[in-house]
Image (spheres, rainbow, N blue to C red):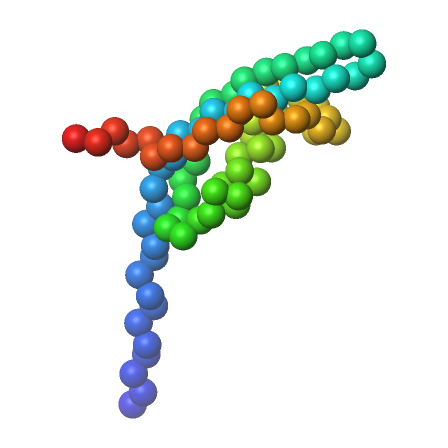
Length: 84
């Protein structure tokens, strides 16, 4: 009889709140928008990984088309749970 190895426990995610302000210029027209949301991140996720996950959602929420390449004017990522 062989023993089955136990699966490692699933890592718990933590909820983070993000805010992103974007700006794009097309000819003489400048468009900017701010988006906010939450992301569930695994322990060990880097800020750059989180940013790359958040940016597409921020672009959509702020009203930029998928083809747009706006510059980031502001980015903030913090734990969503307030200290008690």
